[in-house]
Image (cartoon, rainbow, N blue to C red):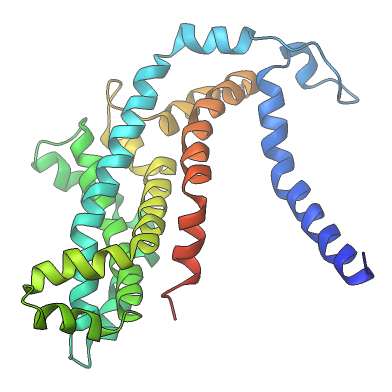
Length: 269
């Protein structure tokens, strides 16, 4: 192993330790007795305990929290793809000189600070009678995530040669048929990458669900706030809940990681 390779691997390892260190600490806290959390010096070895998990299941309806998060994030992802994919395709095949500007306009929607739109969206959902429901959060997340899906799928469809669709049209295929049978299968990595981004953004969001849901519809990202008290933070509860907040999304990313990387490295240029 030459020095360059050794240096590169050392930097990558140091970066992993730096970024994953807090995550590993939070996971370990879930199995650590409360008396050992703030021990000085910190204890590296301790007797694992499931007491924090027992307390979490006694206080929270964990399955319901996870189901709420899945409903909101999956519903948002499906709607974002259904709206954003055709819109991205239309912009990519548009002959207007303003099409690229429109694509970047959609991307600029994600640059608006969420807190600046909280009150208008809250009042709107109140007038529609959607406060305390999944749909209020799903529609709001879809509005924000669709903008990103449009931009990403626009770049991806633009990388496809139009001759492929023209050949399908010559063979008697309709325009929708060419889209579904030719173009859409070729952008599968881009679809999965867009879906994962929309899923992650919706799953991890705290601000909007905190104000738009109630006790029966709140996701697990909002339940994590319960670990924060007026006097201290119950790190054991936070660590135990973090397991259920991270494991589902990590498993999804691991399963679809190959398509995720392809979607990020192809088409966007």
